[in-house]
Image (cartoon, rainbow, N blue to C red; front, side):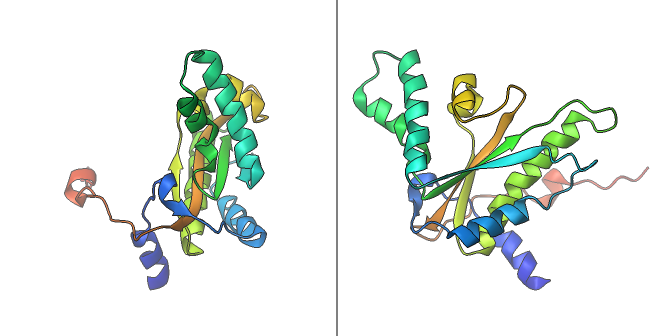
Length: 189
């Protein structure tokens, strides 16, 4: 039990630009995704799925992001377009967590969205357990329908997050965390 608590209390986000290779192996990616899929899922709806961006696929995805950026910013400087092109290549591996919450007679969509968030957090925890570091984030392209279409998302699917994964180039520093008296109360009736 202590090892699990140590794992949970030592997890830190690491900026994508501070993540270095090598990326997790294929077997490790399968482990990460297996852990990610073990989240609460009321009704067994599987309201999430994963997109793995690895190797050259990160740059091919970046080409799609850059094309949309350039369409919206035709006067953008080449270095700004290149920044967009490399969005998913800043880390050795990126796992996109897709929320596919749908109307259901018994299961509120909010519960389904939360399940996708739990899946993303499990990606982060499994990554840490394997000795890697991660950063769960969304940026503008996570909300742009043209990019989502280019990534193969259905019309009712959304990105819950992109989890950037690699090895920390340096030991991450913890950020200030709220004290429990700021975030926890006890219901007394």
